Image (cartoon, rainbow, N blue to C red; front, top):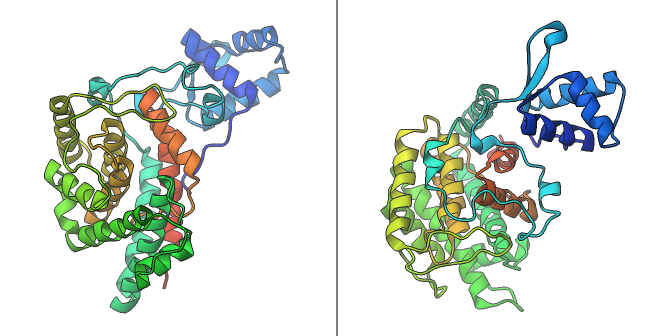
Amino acid sequence: MIQLLRMEKLTKRELNILEFIKKNKRASNAEIMEYLASISLGSSRITTIRSVNALIKAGLIERKGEGRSVYYEEKSTSLFLSYFDPEEYFKKSPDERSVAFERFNFGIFDNIGEFFSKSELAELKNLNDNYAERIKKLPPSIIKKEFERLTVELSWKSSQIEGNTYSLIDTEILIKENKEAEGHKKEEAVMILNHKKALDYILENKKDFKNLNLRKIEDVHGLLVDGLSVAKGLRKKAVGITGTKYRPLDNEYQIKEAMEKMTEFANNKLADSFSKAIFTMLMISYIQPFEDGNKRTSRLLGNAVLLSGDICPLSYRSINEADYKKAVILFYEQNSARFFKELFIEQFKFAVGNYFLA
């Protein structure tokens, strides 16, 4: 099974050990025990070693040396996989948090490593092989119905993440019968129906998304914001984001440059569709190229990349909206994709286990 299907929450002792090792670059068992005692978290050698082993198992630190010369270092990973405990991180307000990047970091393209470990990638591919074998055996009528079901659930959840108040049942009636729910704004119905239009467009042209370019991204965005009084095309003014000190680029030429760098990197530097999908989702959210509808566009583009590689798309039906928003903000402020990756893996496992079943 995938090892990172939501990392176990670190204990207070484990968090302190990790921070101590990060600060000092390396630490022995004796140094760790001395530090824990100094902050009133002293424990037996066995308990300390158990905590250290938990951090090793989580892939956060590694053991070096032999015998009495054993010491521990933070595991060398890309900036994208730096560990932050979301619960602890978001106990502080945006102004209290120690933010690494308050503005767009163009150096991000030079710091990208592997999104997935070999075991994670192997398991993702194994799950998708299972999906591919199932879908081969399904009659076209069932495949059509399953895509309709996924469309309803994706349209509902993706809209809900953006504050839409339609229920799942109301969304199904709207999409299948074109009946708007009472007591809701017209814009909510338009937002949901636009998801269907965008996903239909992607399904009809899925192979076109093997390589991304700005026009294709703008096409999907245009479908998602049609009729919502949102300007289409790259934005020409500054935008702010609720809940974070991060401020996206405010120069249209830099926005275009960042988008071109993003598509070039996605097309030429990422070998597998899983990494390409998660990279595309994060970077569209990070760049915020449009006046509005950026995260909706990112979710649909992520699915476009997956579908272009014959990979099961995500509905996000079971995702917690707060977790999703926290994962994106962690990427804005720290350029860390670890929490977002955990959510992505969870949602992929959910999709494979709930759609296109024989």
